[in-house]
Image 1 (tube, rainbow, N blue to C red):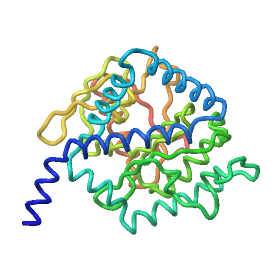
Image 2 (cartoon, rainbow, N blue to C red):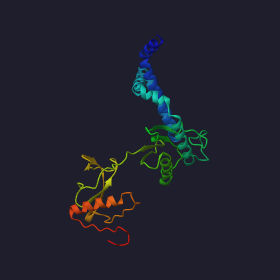
Image 3 (spheres, rainbow, N blue to C red):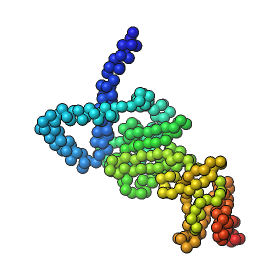
Image 4 (cartoon, helix red, strand yellow):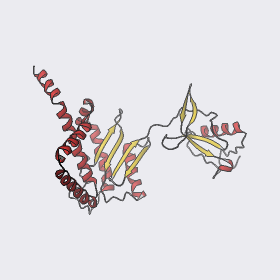
Length: 294
């Protein structure tokens, strides 16, 4: 009987629960923007909010229309699957929280400053990751897959050296055997890290479909280039984005230097280049030992 009563109450109050969840998210978004916004933007934003509130109060039926609009937006934001909501409320596991705290401790020396004007800085030697990390995601193997963090407004995010040091720390703590994409949002003082998918490794050396004077060296991420090539992977044909080296009159640099430890793939690369040169009747000069023995 108690279970039936609870289920009936939840069904009856489901719209209110959805709206309440949306209002909570709206408040969290507003608070996150306010905490991450520079000081020179908070004043104009507060003035604009007060002006809009006064205008809504003066307009006939303004408060009712504004309330209805806010409720509609909250209802849209509050719609979510129950499983995802339970996962969000559960938070990270103990091991994931330890990983996030270790990452926070490694970033603290990069983002903290002795003359920080805030009474509670985002990054401190004895701080916690909850306020600094906005969103995070872990894969099935327990490794970090995505991360969105806030950094102080005084951080020199326009300095390539400062950004590179932060990216090196994130790459080291998230795992050096993967490739990462870093998106710096300088207006909102946020940094988004995402793990790029593995590049295709099962493509054998073959006669690639390329224009004269183009040699396919390998393949990259779909976001890096605007063209694809059909390649054979086993028994199937797949379109992948290539890395192209232009030779002949179109080349700005006609020489190629292939470096790598034994077993890293330099021989496979040279075999692929030679196969493409033979297909077009081009001349390929190789110095395999670096001693001038062409």
